[in-house]
Length: 238
Image (cartoon, rainbow, N blue to C red; front, top):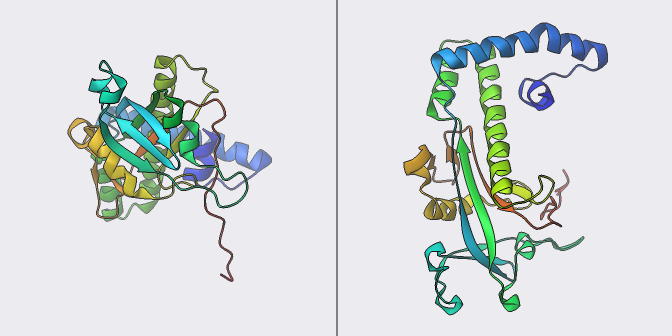
């Protein structure tokens, strides 16, 4: 819960002051809000995920039609291709490196997942803002974002279990973050999974997920997978 307290609810105190803040304000507030969630149902968690055969080629991940897996390998049908950026310096990492290359002759597997807390969460925040209760809107928004992250982690663990992986193996990468900063690939995720039909998420013209309290991710099972950034931080003088 520390992420909720500090990141989403703005807890800036330290030491004994932070402990008092949590015990006197945050925990009672969370208890009250969870009761309201049960009564009002403004958090409606939904998730969808799927597995796809794949291979890498340079900086690209080639995704194949799962229905063709029972046929000969030369009958595999490409249904999507992700092009990932590569670090220009440091270890020159690229997400495609974590999947079996075409040259290996092996077929790998990639998992995609999308989760949401549902449109009612956004509507609850908007209603509070319109009523002028900006503080409560802030806390409801923070709780919804944290719950979406918790659902994403839970879904990731399900995928690990189904793949027979230890919880410490592999990583979950979301578009818009340092390893894969470009959001446009969300369109390919929506082509591969029936996201809108199954859990009600849509994309904006800027490829953002709506409702806001939603996340999409690619799950990598490689034992050496690590988090990294492909773009260097730009200084203020740039």
